[in-house]
Image (cartoon, rainbow, N blue to C red):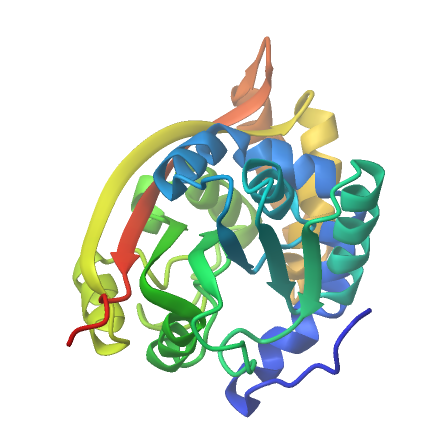
Length: 287
């Protein structure tokens, strides 16, 4: 059952996107999104070190691949996935039920303000779901409160845009020669936690200790061939064509097609990518 969604006003725009068209598109193409980032998935799971009795919180769970894997590993515990998108959570529930995972729960929630039960989880994980908080200190403080003393936070986030070939290639192509505005480095978005110093500052302010960042580089998959990838990406990034005239649109699509063709391999269209695995701990109780 979906909970009543309580959203911090500062996260309202994110909620509209993820509980609207963006989330619906992700839900429709869940297998593609999961395959795109799959090479990074084992690094997150290895760092999480989920044991059979663990109670796991998955933040920004999307269609639930990480939650379901956590539930399988925590066979004597439970895994709860939270996300803003009702459509993605619908897919997550359907897949968990199809796999017979009775210890996986899904809740529609804004993790920045959701009233999680205190000290209810042993580990919180997130696969690219923590970069969009309007107030990350408040969000991570709320997540810390949901962890037991000594509980751990393990998250996968993107390194800087300059280290992610996929992002640079797609945005340059769809810009069609236009200068695109650069958001502030601390604005909610895919690279909001790319700076290690900012990560440490945010997590320390939220009450975490033992903060460590571990870099990983892998290739990402975007389609069987350039035509397949083009259809998917224009559905996901078509908003970037807004404001272009006919000639500009043709140029953008041609440029996108060219970069996708240049990245075709025998195993589909692939681009270099770089992530951080971030570990942190809620301090153990004292006294």
